[in-house]
Length: 120
Image (cartoon, rainbow, N blue to C red; front, top):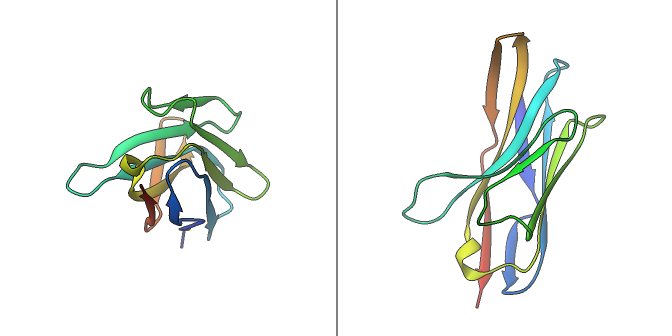
């Protein structure tokens, strides 16, 4: 059974940094894209960043420059380095992974989410 477990969240002051990790387990199937979303209180879940197996990255324009996504394919783990954090970054952060099924199909799995709170 595939599991994604986030870690590294918590409370930080504005201007600080956090590094989120998302470790996967339960499958040896190749993982294609991995990434992160955030869901602020009262808002919909929003895309933050993604990274392909080959390392190609995409970012939400509003977060580019402050957040950096990376991955370790050997560990099937994805990371999100968050710098210069602002109170508006307060949200639950979710990681996801797209597992290869066929050349035209992937199965998506999500973590349970981790809270990040930025105090002013």
